[in-house]
Image (tube, rainbow, N blue to C red; front, side, top):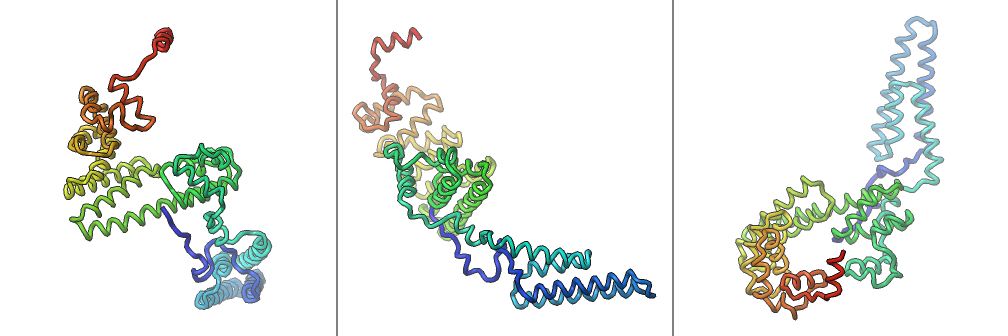
Length: 375
């Protein structure tokens, strides 16, 4: 998956996380004037002049109204309203104390903003445009399954999240967010549980970004499927995306089950429109097995046993037979397709010994057998 970080510089007005600009004569003068006038109104209310309290209250309300008009004028001029708004909401109940607090806040912001990182810089730093050789090399090695072939490239993503420095963890999260695969989910979850707050925030942002990209792609594929409801390819593309979304590991159990049901429905409808599409049938059978529907998976995959040239279909069909306890058919499967499952077939290392066991052609050394019996 790929995604682009929005160009925050194109957004008009101040950003939510940027420090306001308190060093303006207008803001300081308005705050100071409102505070002094309200202090005078307070002093008038505490005097012995007849009707002093009423005059003080009226003057306070007039000052609050003037501050409100000033804030409105700043809004029309598209000026920063945060400190001005703070003055408005504090001067009404607190009077001159509210103005004093606003001035203190402005002074503190002016002090700390000299050292703080702006929101735009911070956000862009979460997912930098990385062209660093080692990081890209690590990604390529892990995606292609060759991460152990070159130890200089470093540990896997999950190991880095366990023992790496905060900077290394942030680099991994940025890389995972740009090139997300379901296998990278443990790294994101490790980031969400990290002791460093900056790592947790970045992992949460990356997770939200991944889910947002999944949802955007979902909406686009759903629109295409609705526009061409009789197109098997469009329905299958939507079903595969939902299947990947459910398999990503970022969803809660209920949401995952709901999306898998939608994917199953999409696969079934697309297969009805393209019964000879072995790819759709394989994806449907695989998802049915993951959902615990082994009987339907076997029924969907069985018609392909004799004609398919894709050994993966036979692997998933064998898994469905095993889950159903149909061991006689499972033993006969290598005999039916010796070209893909026989002794001379090229099988993955993880499955070679398994099918050899079901073919009863696993060589057992006598001394090995004796040691196993003795144990």
